[in-house]
Image 1 (cartoon, helix red, strand yellow):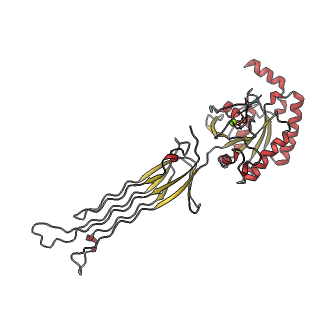
Image 2 (tube, rainbow, N blue to C red):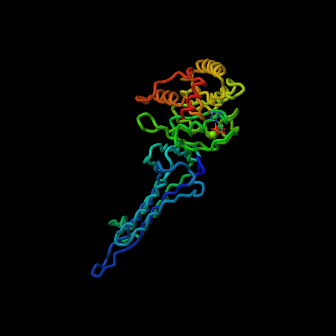
Length: 359
Ligand SMILES: Nc1nc2c(ncn2[C@@H]2O[C@H](COP(=O)(O)OP(=O)(O)OP(=O)(O)O)[C@@H](O)[C@H]2O)c(=O)[nH]1
Ligand SMILES: [Mg+2]
């Protein structure tokens, strides 16, 4: 499925129906009065958040959304019918802005949230309205008003609680694939992931928490290099970041710094978001290398204020339970029944070998 997270659309509410000029013509009623009815109101345009939609793809091809016009008034003082409202469904997490001013008109986060984006025009008045003592036969009626018309910028910000970030090839997609039912593409070259993937990870209570795996970040991502920048906005709303680091990197701390600098440069409070520093692919290291790598990462993590530093192997499914336990604890989700939070210093390659054999 194509992932489209920005769109521009034009919405036009219905025009009000015109009022009309008409007179009663009945037998035995010599001077039938004015009887022109009012026009109906034009339909409104509304946006409605729908949990079944995941992207703004629908708006790539269809851009103009007009609601129905109100009908003209009729004779015998009958009012014209109002135009039907037009309801446009958007995915949850859609921000709506006025294109010209950039002003935020609304943020549709929860399924069922509704936003009126263009009000229908009022119907015109029929000549029955203009009857007075002076003028017993008014020829006057008014036209319906135009409906509002707006150019809107829609921007989808995914609603994930946990964001997985890191350099290309760190194993982000692998991690979401082992934690959830998401099956993103995984390959040993950078920029495998081109669009964010969402996965629902089961909590001990059985409820789900949404994790997002975004394309890899590289130096300069916040200024538009690579793919990362476009997608950083999808983790703006997360409550926790998992910063994944490839244990096979030549210089671990330099690799960590690149991503941290991008978070800083991007702004929007991302650098201050609670963050876990997670070393991945640890089965590539021997016990000594692992201990050294973790000591370095821990020291760095403490210096920059990360919430916790852990070691995992996404591919070998090592260290995942402790990782989840830390995530739940960070999110303030009750981990009752879950495993105790293990210190990953105890995870040694020999232990991993036995994991492999037993599975
Ligand atoms: N040895 C080892 N390889 C791993 C592990 N986790 C992931 N990989 C491999 O690392 C490579 C990259 O994995 P991905 O999950 O595609 O990495 P990514 O971070 O999503 O990469 P981009 O989408 O390109 O940013 C793949 O070849 C994976 O099989 C691990 O724990 N150990
Ligand atoms: Mg990926």
